[in-house]
Image 1 (cartoon, rainbow, N blue to C red):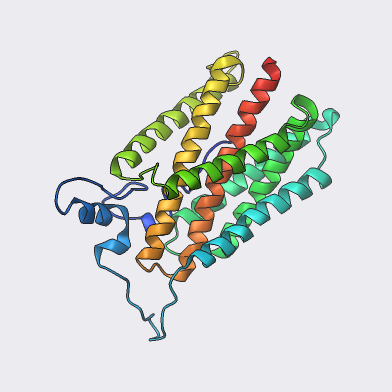
Image 2: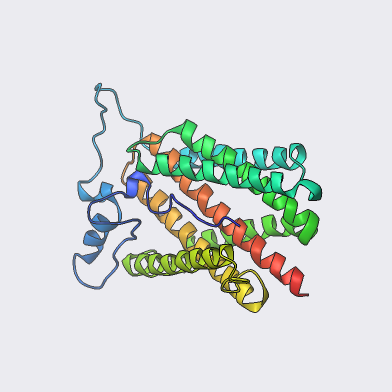
Length: 287
């Protein structure tokens, strides 16, 4: 089951020479540390607000929360729409499971490729972002239908509810200040995510070369625990998404970068959905 987020560390408003991926605001009791943390965590903090005029001399439109909400709705809505269409138009047939598997893998690879292309671009490309969302939706639709039909009936609805419950919980915790996205938080999450992905890659390689059940992440208590860690990591990445959006708006990021914010939020939610689906499926199998 695909569970990677190639855009977590690659959006243009977090690209800086002094950062490998994301960063949060450095919070410290040392005088001046907060300002220094801003320079580490947000490129717009380094030189104050960006130029208010574009290259043509016209007023530059800056990003607002409404922009982020609208573009996130478009991107996430594309994922949901294509997932629903693939569920209806590409039914998983047990006698032709290989075809369905091929469709899912192909869609996932195309989505990953589009995400990488967008990640290395200096500016947002709405067609790339929406294309990524469309192919990610096809992948999710096929995987969800197969899981719901042959492994754990009804689990998809629970996974969707679980995903939005996690997202709401993270948003509430972030707004209340229970989650502080600073440099320490960023470093811990990045290290944890690296270890998580390395373990997942090792598990896939061992499984592919006939080493039984790999590291055992697809069954039993170990699998459930690994899935819970994945959900928690997704929640942490979502908190960093909220921080990046908040900082970008505060420092006057260009309006077009709301597409990048939408891209990041969507990929975080996809991650959380897949991990919640994994956990619920394993719990059903063990019950």
